[in-house]
Length: 103
Image (cartoon, rainbow, N blue to C red; front, side, top):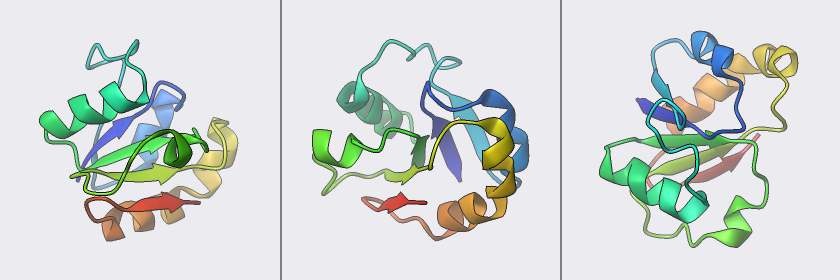
């Protein structure tokens, strides 16, 4: 699965998501894009998932009909996220276009 990390995600977490191709918004030169524009750019670039810690995303953006799924993590502290990395991988493996999953 092609995964995009939002700017609020710790980059080293990529190593924990085995079996997924993970890029960051910064590496794609999308660090300044707001949520709607970021989701649009990610969809156009063929990403399957956006991983973020922005819990308000579902209230700020219309997510119905999107070709990308979104996984919202409980925070952005690497130490804590490493402990739930198997759950993150499971969520990504089960994610379908338009899904919104909050861990």
